[in-house]
Amino acid sequence: MTGDELSAALHKLNWSVGDLARRLGTNSHTPNRWLRGRIPVPGVVATWLQQCIDAPGNAPEIPDGWVKHQR
Image 1 (cartoon, helix red, strand yellow):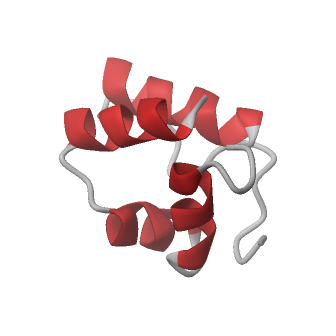
Image 2 (image 1 turned 90 degrees about the vertical axis):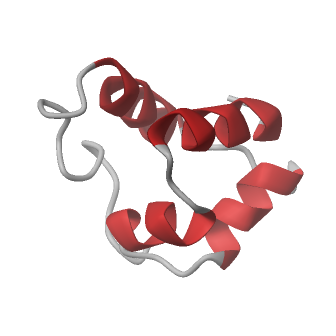
């Protein structure tokens, strides 16, 4: 998932960067780095975001394999 794809996913979910960071239990620096392409979006986060888009009521609270406060 590229930064542009992440931005599009957040738009579809009507989430801000802060919303994403809060749900993942991290600070906003991490998703901002993803958006800018400084570090890649982890695959588990990309998959989880797609699950949230496809079935918002059935997506897991946080992605499998993601440890809160991971940076």
